[in-house]
Image 1 (cartoon, rainbow, N blue to C red):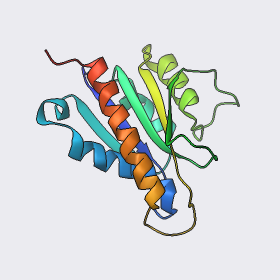
Image 2: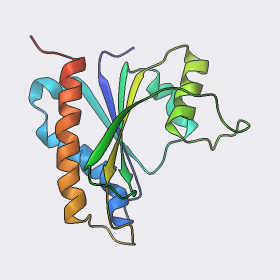
Image 3: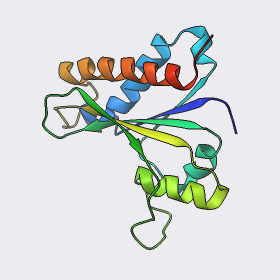
Length: 156
């Protein structure tokens, strides 16, 4: 198992704020110092799929970044995510984070520590630019993700 974190940005790049996961990954790569960049791999995907189980099994820490369309005042929510039994009969199209973590654990016998960072967006129409609110919220979320990575991999 790698001694690194995997940061996964999720979203549809042509649905404005839905692409916030990708935007966060780009911000994170700019914000991390050289010593922290060595401890982090990044991935941007449209959606999760079972094909990622092999990759996820290689990391002790996975941080998912995705858009949150719910109303609220908080710029983002950060929650630890745990494997859950796959909620429907097995197909190759399961894609919730708990489902993928569960399958990773079943197939590879490992359970990465995982977090979802749900970043609040406001505009999910067709388009490639994210809203000012989403960009602001992404900055706040990336600051917290940087702290989480530092907590998990302290530099002495």
